[in-house]
Image (cartoon, rainbow, N blue to C red; front, side, top):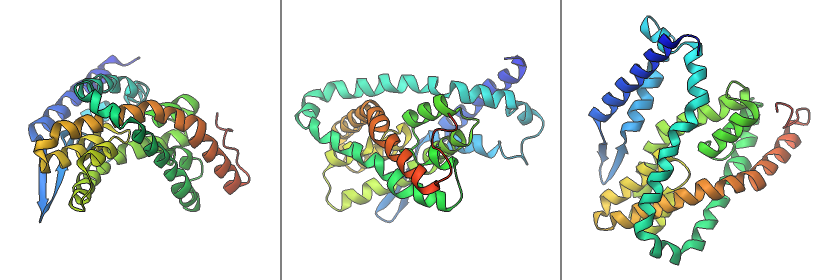
Length: 269
């Protein structure tokens, strides 16, 4: 990196944002019998997005959000996610016996990753997103999809902007949505183990929000809920890669080429 001073500004800014987010901490907003859980991660992403707005990107923030720093951050984003995998494994181990007893059920949720292609891709193309739709509709645009699009197209491409946009939107709004939606299903009589399993959708922030919201309503089952969510998250991260490669990508390629009839799915490779 040529301008190391700008990188230092970025690192210091990241520490300040993390510090402020942790000071705010886990917040819960109640709406009658429901509550919305907002994690520190959501506040951190919000602060990062606010100061990136051109109107605020002046002075020191212009150096923080320099083109060089943005490119550096996009290339190294995946490395910060590695410790999460170790954390998930530690959460699963104490409950491994019970999880294995229903292990086959975890496989069915992977089919849901195809829903974004079947329903969202045609709508995205109708809205004129073109190649941005490839990145935006490949699964939930989490770590696996982000890695695939980054390797094949780079984050500077239209496909990269699509997956990164959905990644950030999912982190900011997905956590809030699932922290409200999961308790709603609990009130309809869904088993806490099923909701814990459903929380592991491949997103650390969404999983934490959904599982924590359910655990807050059923504190006596907190360990089971978090264990099922973590196991589901691990399997989604592992099996989701194969689902994406062997099912999602071929399906998306076929639908994209069929719907566009003039653009080739692989031409941006």
